[in-house]
Length: 279
Picture 1 (cartoon, rainbow, N blue to C red):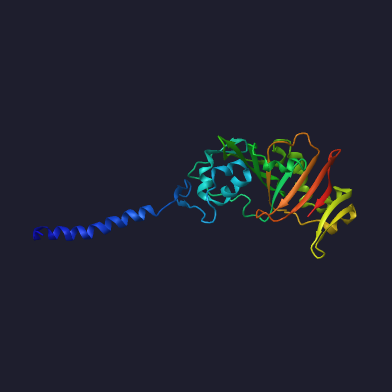
Picture 2 (picture 1 turned 90 degrees about the vertical axis):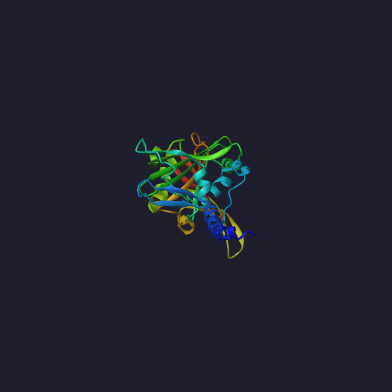
C-alpha cells in the first residue's frame, strides 16, 4: 500500500460511522407530526402498539373499523376528511389536519348506548351494506349534543362531519325519544311516571346462576332500576330508520363487550313508557 493514502483512509474511517448514525436516527421516527395552530406545540401521533391497523376487510362492518379508529391515533388521522366540517351554532368552523387531536370517542367510557326501533333493527350493525353511522356525545343535564357522522365512501369508513347542537335539533326522527331519555335518566320522579303498569323482565340472578323471566309492576321498578349515566352518554346510531317507529330498544354495554342492560320503550299517545327490561 502506498503510504501517501494512509491519512485519507484514516479520516474516512471516522466519517463513515458518523454519517451512518444520522441516517439511522431519521429512520427510527415512524410518526406524523401535527402542529397545533393555537399553541404552536407539536403533537406526535404514534401508532398504539396494542392495536394494529385493520385489514381492508374490516371496513365491511363499522364496529370492526371503529375499534381501530378509536384506539389507533395514526389510523384515525388517516380516516378523517380534512378540512373536517364542524358545525357550531349553524356556522362551519372547519378543523384542519394540524388542529386535530386524537379522540377516543367511547373507548374510554364505562358504557355506551345503542338505540334501535326493533330487535331486528338492533342487528343492523352486522349489515355489510350499511353506509352511515352517527356517534352522539350527549350531556343529559344540558341536552348538548356533539354528533360525529361517519360515512362509508369508496368502501372505506371515514369521519366526514361534526355537528354541535342540542337534542331537540337531532335529525332522522330521533330527537323526541332522546329528549325523553335525558329526563328519564336524570329525574327519578319523571322516570317513575313513565313506567308501564306491567314490565316484562329477564334478570340474571348471579347467586342462583339462573335467569328470572316474568313481569313486575310499576311499584317494583325501584328494586330493579339500574344506575343510568347522568353526566354524559355516548350513543351509537346505525343508519336512519327512526322516523315511523313507536318503539325504542336501548342497550347499554361496555366497550369491552361485557354484557349490559336492555330497556324497551313503547310510545303510548304522546308519552314514552318503559315496557321491558333485561340484564
